[in-house]
Amino acid sequence: MAAVVIHCSCPDADTAARIARALVDERLAACVQALPGVTSTYRWQGGVQVDAEVLLLVKTVRARLDAVMARIAALHPYEVPELLALDVVAGAPDYLAWLEQACADLESAAGPAHPR
View 1: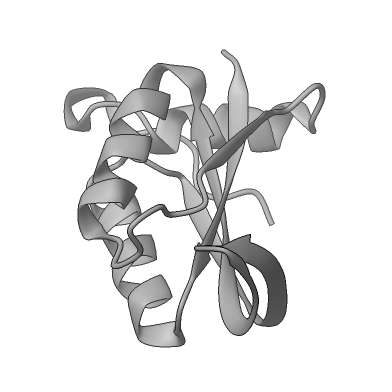
View 2: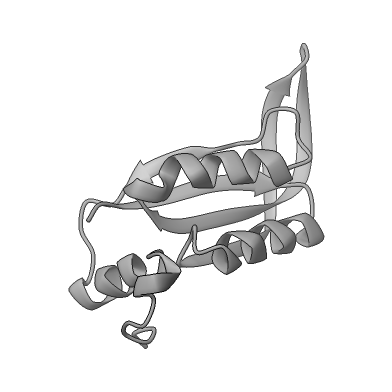
């Protein structure tokens, strides 16, 4: 199993919550963390922009990566949403097992509870 974390910036908390809930409800992600208070400085359409955003950290498995990216793109209001997938090189075995189970198809969903 290869774990992946996707970075996705959102314009506001409502958008972030809507995307996060859809990804977890649809078993595309095991967990999505929303980090408010992010300030993004970037070049767009010939100028420098500075915007307050909410950063999503989406935890999923490589097998779901294409579906996650497509679902975020479909739900996201930005013309070009930030979608950066980062491979997880290591993790706590119990957490990685939970992540894999949480992203499994519904037929195989009865697995371990979230490791606390």
